[in-house]
Image 1: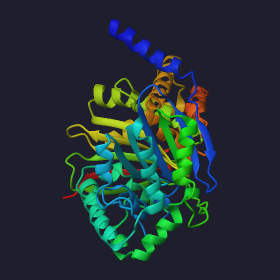
Image 2: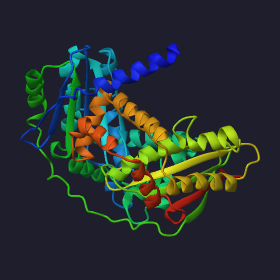
Image 3: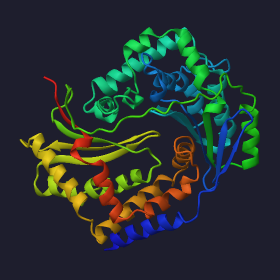
Image 4: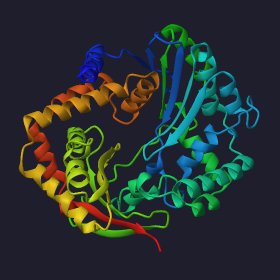
Length: 440
């Protein structure tokens, strides 16, 4: 009982704390770099992130993997500049008690660092070096080509279920839209690319007018503005801001039935995956509710039915991945014992159909609503979380104010919305139906 009371008080503290909006300052430099600052002097730490509006979606056919390649080129210990000796980048960061990392996805590439706040100027300088002085030479290309290949072998080719984790299965769904392209790319494309092509890619995409800089933590706004102007203000754009075509993916109207093979697994999996709206659409938020209803914890419908009661599944979960143009919503189930994948399919369909035909109860709805709101609040309780959210909301959602307003979208969702959206997107003829089995 005491533990329950503490849990309730903790959740209420989070939700009440969120009533105080996250304040931020937002402006542009003359060169087009968008800047967002958030001041929080409660702890002596600072986080910076630069997010570039370039991802695998923007790569042309035959040149896949360039975005991810540049993540390594510009973020690894061998990402050098005239002012940083080769392979000293990580040493500089670690010697000051900092950490740094980067990632690439379909719409963006981001680089972040996290330091004690007395290293604010160093953090800003390091980010500016990447934009201003990154050297793209043959030595760099050859080195990072091998690093990327090793990563693909380690994380995709030789890791269980990796094709699912890295959404390699999207090629079956996005047959016209470039979301079907692999984020990590192909060895053949990287091997055939010339040094000049890599250099042109950098000049086209790594410019102030194609990026957002976010700094959050123990800072003073005016001092930070002056440092940003000093290190970023004179950086020139090598190209106009790239325009992006609006490519339409026709909806799935007939079930796509495929089998995918993976030599690294022992237990097969059943996957359903559906095309859904972009990240900012209200329906995407409703789908997050649906995920919680069906697989959000041990009391959720599919987990309780398949794992606890019928003991047909070792694990079952659902998740949405919502990007700038479209999203995906997927189910993943592992059979227990001799259970067939067809049985898993039938049980998942049964619970989806129930959601399509019956309103969830008020009690279940309130439970799910509290779970979703608490998860949202927790996402922005750390400086790194706030930094990432501000960058994403601006660059990928076109609306920085969502860091405060998004909670109201969740609160506007009704039980009727859940039923309507389940009927709108989660029908058998609208999905990829995959048997994911061991390669013999």
